[in-house]
Length: 379
Image (cartoon, rainbow, N blue to C red):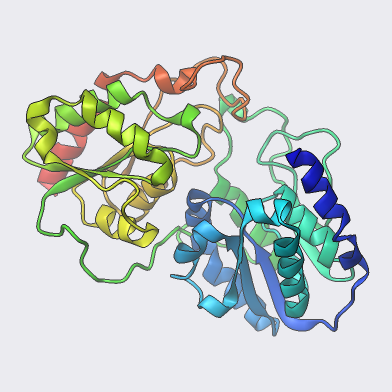
């Protein structure tokens, strides 16, 4: 039923293909991906802004609604267009109003960067006719058959191989750098495009406590480290230190947090501060910034931690191994390499969580905790 409604709504907005407006001196940059993806892209935003400004074009950014508070740290609110992905496909009134807003913006140029999505392609097909549209040719390494290309200009991938070298993807920041260099005809170093988070200097709600942060969820439940194992890791840290443990996550992670607390020894539960589902995105970032260390699955808030130079332990799966690794010394990764690595998250095992996550031993995480605690003492 949902598929029928989705396709019907697409059909009922086909008239936007034939609407024409006078182009304005603006460019629309589409980044309708998740929080972690946006954070890894963040170092390029000032570069794009400066590049298009030199061309006499104002930069507008299209992001998902959940990413807006983060995007607003980098750009003014009136330069950000938010997209509710679900409503875009399943609410005809929302879809038409959204497309009308984009036509009013009437950008002379639409750029998709290296991120490709069905809604991004859909938007370009409906309002991009006659405009300069620029996108990336192909995925990070694996190419699909019958791939749609709706762009006038392609920036070719520098990695045309069908299988990642040594079962490892090239990092997404390397591809973004390649894209920007091809677009601007200017080579840049990794230092010039490194991710950053311009947080306000205000204190968080529990600034007087020494604590470590635990991010309990992930983008998919299949990629969440087993709750009983994570409870053992938290217990290990609590017994080794006098820190409190701060649990963070969204409303969808409430059940995970509840199970996690139940797995902990009763004598240690008074040192748990459970804020899952109770903080905004910016509040969560402030809390992570002031913590001793962070531990969690490969997700947006964990990426935020190492970007803000907080010692971080990232529990990492093999679906895109190498694509989203930390880029500085504060990011530590624990993983279990399997023969099926780099499956693009098309897991051949019918297990939850996926085998490459569930196979990670608590002892491997203990070793990283000891390493980080010793390093922190020396610093």
